[in-house]
Image 1 (tube, rainbow, N blue to C red):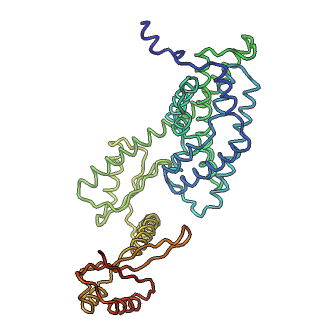
Image 2 (image 1 turned 180 degrees about the horizontal axis):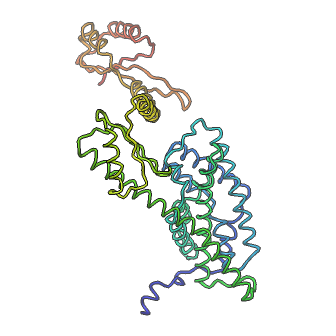
Image 3 (image 1 turned 90 degrees about the horizontal axis):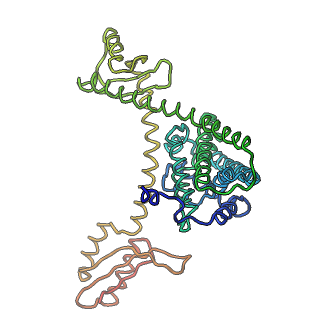
Length: 431
């Protein structure tokens, strides 16, 4: 038992408490460089969310200095240093306002306003976000109190994802969607609060000395306040987690219903749309050639309860005009996403074309007019004059046994310049 205690003992490898507090206090302030670093990190994260790039978002979180005042608030609560607590809250408020302003400004000016999956993922927090913030905060604070720290803060910042919710809140403000703004700000508050609470618990567990004397009555009052705040944060997150679970179960049951009642019977489904949040819930479907009678529709609606999706209305779309409009709208939406890929592919093709030679007709003419040149190679090469200047040159390299007379080479060069409409032609004999 003693070995197990030593194995789990947090005091082993612990840094001096005054030094830890000194480091934590130094990381709280948001002035000068820290504000600029935060603004740049928020701008990078906003771009990442806007273009749906996870790698860019992670990079932004690595350079974010947001963790300092949150950990500082947890330490301040643990040692009852209310001056430090006020300073931490003040600096966290400054960081939050700066972040919201930068993200709001970016999304206001950005021409791309469509909500990507990375943005939508930050609009409905639940209990799992609480667990991530709490255990991520524990890991970060434990590491901060070690002699050999490494650098856990970037990892904790990534795990708890402090910046994306702030950027999403700025996005909600920019497009006037206060549901997105509220959900994202709630997620950010959850992350800040539970990192702070995990810090408070570790400070208590490691028995950091109190900076100020606090009587028992006030200590109990602080504990009750913290408990109340924990409940205030937890209850909505439990409800949102329950809603998420219900939606997942409902979606699975709908898929099972469609599979059993339509797909397995050979009906070709061409349109499906599920409205989970409508009252009543609604499933809209349409088929390629199957037409359902009113009696068949009634029978299918009655079967919904069998698949545990009662309280749902099944709508079979058989009006070709409305259906075509919805399908075309969906195709148009997908086309916008595909078009971005097409542009990228086209640009890559153009870039590749600048380095390749594919004029087969010209090659055939060379073979007829200058047969002595073979074997030869022809292509384009980038010539760098200096770091700021470069150009493409057409290079012909031949390896014939005997050197071709200078007059013939000059004739070939003049002919190529005319055919290629370029003065950047060079003929080289490979040794």
